Amino acid sequence: MSFLLVVLQAVFGYCRVVVKDKIFYLYLLFKPFVFFYKPETVEVVLSSKTLIDKSKEYDLLSQWLGKGLLTNSGAKWRSRRKLLTPAFHFSILEEFLPIFQEQSSVLVSKLKALAREPWLDIVPLMTACTLDIICETAMGVSINAQDGQNIEYVRAVHEIGDSFMYRALRPWLYPDFIFKWTACGKRYTDNVLRVQALTKKVIRNKKLDMEVHSKYKNDELFPNESPSHGRKGKVFLELLLEHHLNDPSFTEEDVREEVDTFMFEGHDTTAMALSWALYSLGQNPEIQLRVQEELDEIFKDDISRDITREDITRMKYLECVIKETLRLYPSVPLIARECNEPLTILGHEVPSGSLCLILPTELHHDPESFPEPEKFMPERFFPENSEGRHPYAYIPFSAGPRNCIGQKFAVMEEKIVLANILRQFHITSLDPKDKVLLTPNLTLKNVKPLRLRFELRNH
Image (cartoon, rainbow, N blue to C red):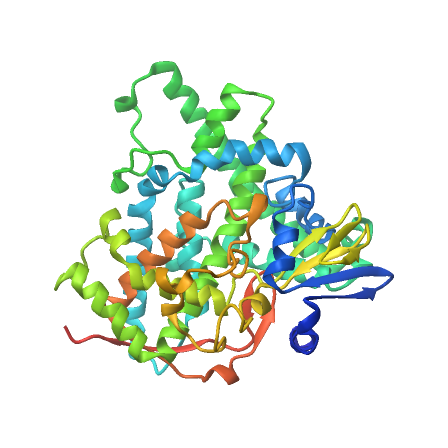
């Protein structure tokens, strides 16, 4: 990862030296890499209806994700996107509130038990929490990662990401017939089979359950698997299976691809966003206090009341904190597109076959869009301070046709988890910003532990 760190810093430094050009390219193994880090050029790439093919490196995930929404392109991607968009309507997301609440309460309990420790690395704790949330919302099953259960499954999910990055940095391992014989390739295959085995088992059981329900039309005889949540709506898997049962051309394998894609995209990105938010608040106690004052106004003296939809809409300043966190620490450090036909951007010719790389971190540090870009200032996102800002100056969830379909889900989850932590704890970050080294992985990660101290608040 030290090599990645050097590359990241070198690219960012070069961007700032040639900032007047707004775009630069280099050749690597005879392939042109074109870098975009200014709103005007980023807009051309992300708003394009033809430049929508992800980079070929995403094909390295095909053994796990197949042709799901992340890796797909063309007509199949458009039909899948149209099919899945209603699953993220706010009225459906509201049904997930009890799951967000329950799992964040488990996290708070873990933090209370560890509050006497001199410091905690928040990332593993947060990752277990978001993995529990995504399993329950996507598949309707509890894996209890926070309680140390299903360790093999949890480890497999994490190792798949590590194996992908290992392979992505070694082009000689791209051919499957080479990679599968390496130690990393064998471990990757074993982990994929382990993760898919659970998904397929859950799909089979859920499909059988839905077929029985459909036959007898009597929900009282077949209670919901998770009655404790009081959930009336459907998890992601149930919505996909409904479409499968109505249209057999949408196969069980198609269902698995989308569920695994949602699992992959929906836990690590959110875990890092939450971790960076807590780190940033621990670095800025006056901002943390302002968030807590907003929460105290909403919840009064009741520090453990469940959070409602109305509460979420009142968390205006906390939402600005989340936005500012994602400005400084965008979960996805690189957005890559394959350019399959020549393109002209601000007078620059982008040749066919180029790999277009958007750098959200550098884009979000553009002083023209964000004065004093290194400072953590949630006020940037007050409505009056956002007026006139270029719409492509800030893209934490990408933008255009291939923007993140789950961004409302993510923000709702982040608000609930952060609110439940900040209602009960004061957080201190032990490492200054210049000592926290970033590295581009599948998400923007810290090289060393992200050390935070948690102290119970005096109410």
